[in-house]
Length: 253
Ligand code: IPE
Ligand code: IPE
Ligand code: MG
Image (cartoon, rainbow, N blue to C red; front, side):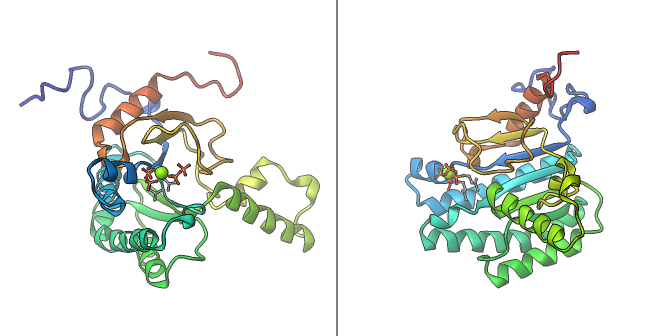
């Protein structure tokens, strides 16, 4: 039976958007869990719990649509400023996600990778993360990159340090450092830059996410809080992306 809410030009499979118009790499700033919970008069952590359901839906839909890469901002290097109880709960959710999603990740041929600093993440969480990364490493479908304890400036700092060490050790000539050298020394080495960056909960800012990599990403912001984000919203963002004209500093063709 056809869904009366879906018009014939907006097919659930996104068949109205040709494959070559779709983003290869989508990055999402999953914001607004706390505000969503507060609106329902629930504690902030309930928002995070509900946020995990949105992660599940979005990951599965990205895999179904054969999106090459989905990068999710799970915890920023600045989020450590939050109360310890909230941070502990986030770590617990992360660990549970790694365990509970493993079979779906394998069924859907998803490759999991993590970007961010490991320091500060509890050992048990790191161990479950590593298990999932290892297990999924031979898969060949959508890459799910989770940004955990990630900060764009921290990433650049770490990258500059490793470049400086190579220069010091005589392995790299400073005159040969170009943009590609910098990209290769970031956590995202080898990954394509995001084509589309989605932010939920309405803030018009980047919040230290993928600073180097977003230089020409298309931005799409929704007022919906992350727990309210559904497959149809991902489709809407992809449709908006498909209708944009990217120029990369050049002229319209
Ligand atoms: C995003 O939701 C999740 C994380 C940053 C971990 P928030 O917790 O930032 O929710 P708001 O922005 O306070 O509503
Ligand atoms: C960005 O959200 C970080 C994540 C979604 C993990 P924040 O809630 O931390 O961003 P600000 O503080 O509103 O900029
Ligand atoms: Mg927030």
